[in-house]
Image (cartoon, rainbow, N blue to C red; front, side, top):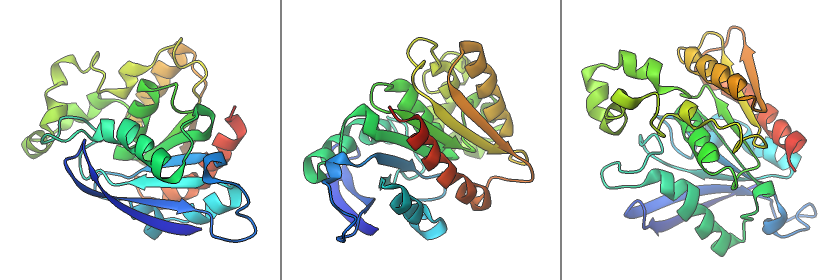
Amino acid sequence: MALVSVHYRSDQLKKNVEIQLAVPDCNQSFTRPLSEYPVVWLLHGLSEDASSWSRKSNAERYALERGLVLVMPSADRSMYCDGVLGQNYFTYVTEELPDYLHKVFGLSRQRERNFIMGFSMGGFGAARAALTHPAQYAAWGSLSGLLDLMPMLAVMDENARREFPFLTQCAADVETTPLNPVNLLDSARHSSLPGYIACGLEDDLLVCTQRFQAASERAGLPNRFVYVPERRHDWNFWEEQIPKFFDFILEVAP
């Protein structure tokens, strides 16, 4: 795969940003335009950035084997939310960036060719993106994701409250706010939006996935839940799950 680094000024973030893309090399296997490739949006975790996928996993090799294009944006410690110090990370990832990369590289905007997945904070962002815009993604994934804010808000200390005021402000309506992924589940809107949701059984965020699963099952949604013994909130688990997610999207793609 060729790793492409793109720098441009984002209107939504009001600053210059970097995006990494993994696209086919110029060889015999690259026989069709990028517009015909499935696109997987990969969202990093809280203390990481776009380079994490290349430095800490074999995501590029897995994508090459399956004929996928990867888009890896950086989102700081924003939780992929809008209104973070005047910056709109959710709108950037779900609207501005897809439109920009379609214009510049010809990446497909068709639902059947777009998938989104993330780990930890990125799982939170991917869930909100897919569940908010089900007409935009054919499937989504979360690895150790923060899929229900209630357990986290219950144990946040003062430092965390200061760092994430955009989340703590919704504590009073955590059971209804659209910032909380579990509240977005809708049996009608998401009946054809499959998700691959994995978490290690030794993960501190396990309860978030379990609560999300309970709500998903009540709504009768086509989500696949995977729990792995002796796995924690780390790259050992996420590296194992990346190719499984890629296989999942090829299996369920329209």
